[in-house]
Image (cartoon, rainbow over all chains, first blue to last red; front, side, top):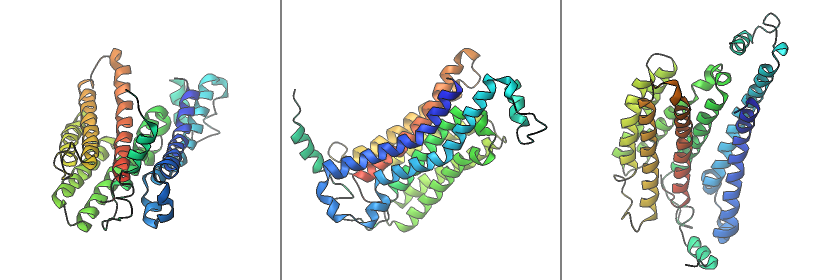
Length: 102
Length: 209
């Protein structure tokens, strides 16, 4: 799998989970349990499985989107070795530079 | 054989949503929070494999998996304290999660080998499956949706144990098996996601703990 494909999967995992949660919620309130919309409780809002799935997807996005950007950037460096950051200029990156040179 | 969509929707509509329709359980809901946490951490395990060295450069991210196990273990202790029934089952699960958190933490700190960590994980997953499934009082398996859902959670635990066992067997395998080994690693992450999803399903048809 190319670094770009990896970055895309990493970045899309959270949004996909959120989309699945929204679809679950719409299915529940729009098809299976229409009448219960009038009896929504705070407990249901906080602990509804579909709502928690959306929350989990949001957290996954928060953690993974910066990682996806980093993976994509690293892929770029692998593709173009001349663009590798100079270790003297970027003290935080020498270990990654070394990994790419391996 | 034909399926009548109207009859299917009507049957689905009679299932007890939100803990039995208007009847709210007095116990605090635990299933959905543990489910969401496991769904989150399962996704993180998959991303960890996809990101590779980029992920391992962040020490805090590497420790997310043992931290999640620790939170679930402490949460189960809280459930044990607050819920009056099934205390022994919840304590057993809490101890398994806390011990699992400890072994995974030790492995990720480089103090024990993967083999040693799996030597605990495999029996823990098997025992956990029995505690969640057959030992959990849910009514007759053929007629109770709750019993069937708990058995689904238990089955996911056993599948995870089989994956871990296969991983342990391939630990020192030749390079030719690397892609299969990598597939097993991904399967474990997806399996943890499935465990979380099955717990969310339990909450969908049940209010309780």
